[in-house]
Length: 229
Image (cartoon, rainbow, N blue to C red; front, side):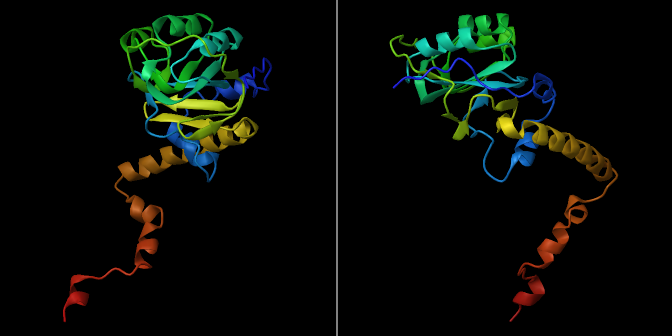
């Protein structure tokens, strides 16, 4: 059954925009105890890519991109297309022209659990794209797919309206309802890490600053003198 939901609830655009410059690692650290960072197979198509935007989710039949074309026409400025192509990497589901269309309509980027093509052209236009692979073969156009349903991308569940934060290290998903809390926590952690960096550059050890020395002492560590019989 194919489902297309034209209307989704998005976080405040100012909140989403404020995620620009937040590292994906920091967003992952403060989002929660479950996995929100996509797996390492989802990589930026070019070095220096970064994105912050609201998810418009797409469930595409592997090897088919008809629904992706439709989703591009439905997305709003600042949105990120999050495409679940079931990890299929033997077809390029999108390429230069589709990305050019996204950029012309002010989309924030694309994340696809599948393959793309025209990698160098996409890099040249500096449109943020994250994908599991690159493949030259073109896709079919015969499956309606679904838009704005829960999808899985990079082994993380993504709902329409979630916030995507991406950089050179990968992509983190921030649940829509948690966006403001996560943003505040991320800013606080970035400030704390700046202060910690200054202390480290002055010669202090994280091992002691973070109390790891106490944790280490609690472990059953045997020294050379303890192993002598």
